[in-house]
Length: 92
Image (tube, rainbow, N blue to C red):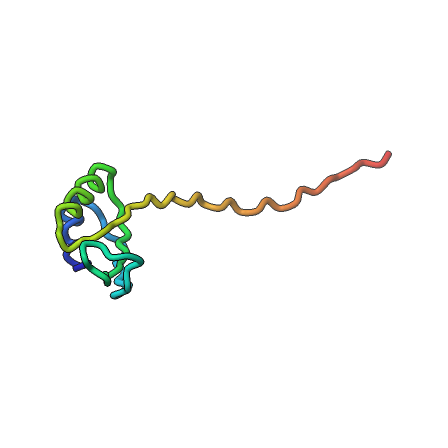
């Protein structure tokens, strides 16, 4: 299922960086008379319009009970630590 979803979003022009299948788990409450569901994570680099279309297609897919899309902020590069500046004093 996750391979198909990955191919679906690739077809929209996005880059799939990671696909994780968390396996079948019991749901906290019944959704559409289902007690269990298969959880997974797709990590994708895409434009907002591509994500919006992907979410629309997920809503239409009857096999998908729930989904959650989140935006992961890009980490800034850590600056190298500045070496301590030496203080020179002139003694007269």
